[in-house]
Length: 211
Image (cartoon, rainbow, N blue to C red):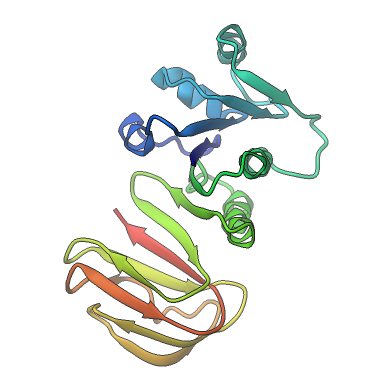
């Protein structure tokens, strides 16, 4: 089963959200993420958070729509998005797309969102952060990615050195490289065909794919 979690950061387009929806998709709004869904007339299954930033009219609307509202105190140990993740994990969800977690004015929120990907990896949940420009995923094993010829992607080591890293099928290939956190070598690469193979044995890689 699949879930989309809408947080309160930069809002995605309605088109992007609806592309992710299937008949069985569970929609979870994390606090002010419910404002976006209210605007788009998309009904969530759950509304979760301390509800300190949701529009009053939107909150009442969803309550009257019998949406499951789970309210937490303002002083809490988790972000609203992480509370939404905990709910998804309790529902035994195996795939999550996070919206409203990229961009914005606060780098700390972005770092927290990247941390959600790491938590999903440990929970064996396939997860991504997505907006209208890019998708971010966290790789903990070798994989083959697919996209159109000429599409851009970047890799960044997450939480330590990734090795031995090899990239084939891209404009800039790599063989048995030790990629350290912060290295810019693997930024802005390009698909030469429709697939790129990324192999490594240790570490974790952030994969940023430009849409």
